[in-house]
Image 1 (spheres, one colour):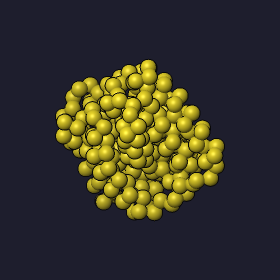
Image 2: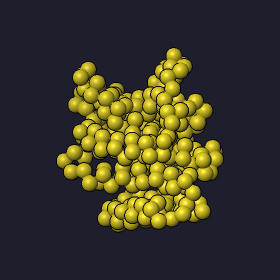
Image 3: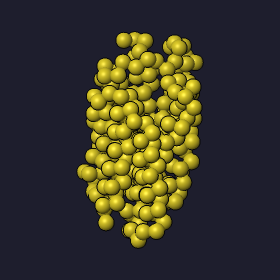
Image 4: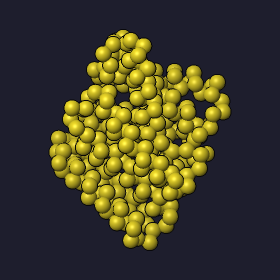
Length: 249
């Protein structure tokens, strides 16, 4: 009964490829249809609880994309866009965590070994950001490197972007797929979904690199079960990528 999972993931991939090719309305339509199909399946099917929980986790990707596309265009490309989109996503994320009774251990709420994870997370994040900068060459999301701007972008990238994306891709999607497909495939799927959701940059190399980044985060999360570690890596990478490296390099 795993075909429902594969069809739902295929729908996400096709919808994202439509967006990548510039067919925005078609991409949105596919995502909306997929969302409705998954919802109806959860209501009327006799699937196992593990399959249903995994399908429910995929809804988060569809919501993230639909909400992002629905955000008024004057926020697009600015730092303000992220708190609005990712702030809204806290609601469905917390609802799924509560509904599925996902434990703090599964989420990765563990503050042990931070003396090791903190410098490791910062270092890995900086390395990831440097490589990704060479691919994207993004414009900075802040006007200058004033302390107040650095604090602002750090809050946005850690509290909103990093926290929500890691809760979705690692704490929820990866742990749900572990129950139905096993450890190895859960990392591959969560990493691949993480990569395909980067089609908005319109660069194939960025999608491929985001997949690799997702695999790295997934592997580290699986080995450490430390949400703070992967949040440090992800948040640091984004702060450097969109805040510091555009000025330094």
